[in-house]
Image (cartoon, rainbow, N blue to C red; front, side):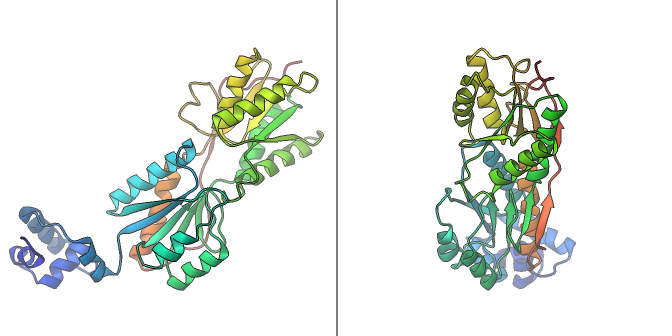
Length: 334
């Protein structure tokens, strides 16, 4: 069986140099590293992760916490995270933390046993007790989707983006606008529903209109369909426009309108947030936020910190967005 000593002999270096070259720990010149890697490839040598961990003190594994897997935004972020981690030579352990559930196990059992080099929290805000454990272990964490005190995060400005979506409808002359928001009870998501609601209400207030209507729903296509069908059935106060907190909600709203015979956009305008892959199919006006790129950016921030034996600089890095106007929004009906 081929061992590290065989690789070192073929490359003409010491065992310690070969180990450093293959593990990425310590300085090795580029020429020497390439010679060692060529020798390992010729011999079919695969370094043991456990052995590498003993040398570097790292597991080459990142823990990823996520509240949902089936919803489009989270799936896209996860794809970006997985692709970027694989490119950097890291494994990923996925930990599904549903809204209302504690994330303590991932910290108490896995992180404390040093099974992770760091954590990416996708729309999950760890409790203060968990953050205290992280600080004690000196392990880095990067958030996606909002702000965690004292932690580096990749996010979009939900208040500003909600204002932008609402102002787009106001500029088209709409005054009876309904906001389809996520469930306020889903407290694990960095208060995204609350922030998007705040942006909507601020835009409506600044326009001098009565307080806007907010309808809560699970942020999914069925959720958007059900809430919109109920809202449009009220012929005395039927909205002419809907600002949905996600594209899935918006798509559900468009389907409900079509089934009720309400034409989009001549009788109902709809705008969402995400840049969902089906947005073009539904001709949906949306604010695109490229979640895959957010996942990739989080990996870069975290892995760079891990390999430098540092903690990421705390603070929120706002990801760029684009308002994509399509045919689901139009001038308000008279």
